[in-house]
Amino acid sequence: MKKEPLQVNAGMLLIPDFSDNESFFALIRDLIFYLPGYQPQSWATDSGDGSKLSLMDLRSLVQEGASTLYWKRKTSPRAEGAISRRVQTPAGQEHAAHRLRLSVKNNEHVDWLVSYLCYCAASDGVDFACFGAEDGSRESNSGSMQMESRLCTKLLERTMPDLCWGTIFGRVYVELFGLDKLLSAPAHLVEQLTPDAVYIQLTESIFDLRDRADKVEIRKNMVKRHLDDNIFFDSHHPANHVYRTPIFKFQ
Image 1 (cartoon, rainbow, N blue to C red):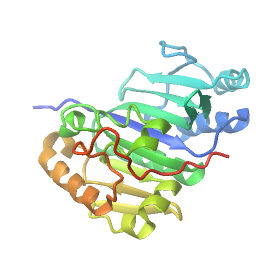
Image 2: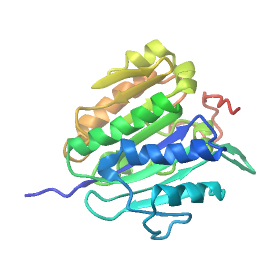
Image 3: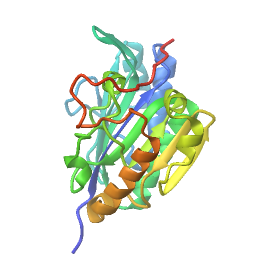
């Protein structure tokens, strides 16, 4: 029986603030060029349907001061996302971010996403990025509560909620965990992307989240035990427990 596509959520917190229009436009252009299989078909400044825009149209929106741009792709493979500059909120600064929701049919689609996130980590710099399955996996029912889709600075300033299937640990986490500990994680794939960014992938295929959930859970717990030093959320701790967290260095 043919299986349904896996719905994948991804998010990344970028180091630059993208306050200048040219760098923000370059970030948007990189999505189009470096994730071509999921090339957006419509853009908007809110979460509505949006409209088809040329690169020149997008540049105009950016120059008008848009702080967040939403995009959608309605034909297969379907996808949507939101790209935002760094913002100042009453609670403090929130990273520039890109959050994506993708329909994934095969491992090639996953490779496109991994390549895009790793490119952004190497070219722009990310403090943190992660992705995992939305449905059909134990992950969606665990303490992570879809960490990828709700990823934000304030969340990570409190604790690391869980470990996703694919994670890029940027500069602040290399400092927090230690490079040697990250590189020696007992995961299927561990790759140093830059001197201060490491990609960790739990198992060979993201479809394991649906088809071999027990295997993923075991591997995730192994990696968390290897890495943890009062960093990952633990439901056994009281609500006011203080975790070790990174210090985000906003310039």
